[in-house]
Length: 133
Image 1 (cartoon, rainbow, N blue to C red):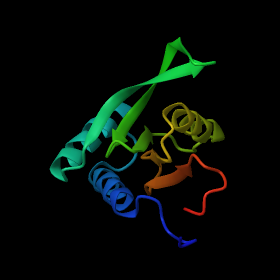
Image 2 (image 1 turned 60 degrees about the vertical axis):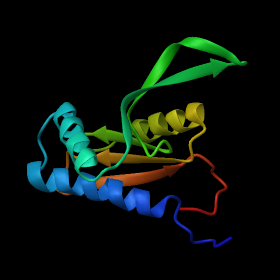
Image 3 (image 1 turned 180 degrees about the horizontal axis):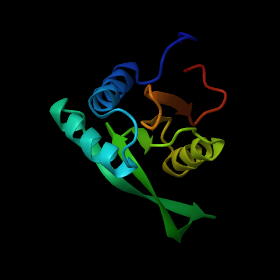
Image 4 (image 1 turned 90 degrees about the vertical axis):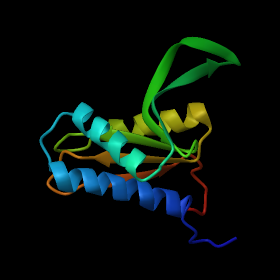
């Protein structure tokens, strides 16, 4: 296996391209909900399959808890996309996305921030010893 292989490369580029389109059109300063709605429109325009506000079940010792998480989007049934609209992204948001990946057993999450003058994003992997980036 290649050591520099990017996990879900084509899908990731398409998702990030949609995010860039939204940010180029709106710029920073809107509420997160506005970016989510416009990103949903871009996903539809680009035929990116997604599930919005996906409910994520949490288990403890094989028992389902009443508490659930909600991911902003799950795209292609394998990539969690979490949107933010803040001037500085705290580490807590990365930890939140890591928890989403843990409970779903999905391998890749993309944390996207629309709140800065340039779009920022971070790819987060579920497997810490993976050779993917």
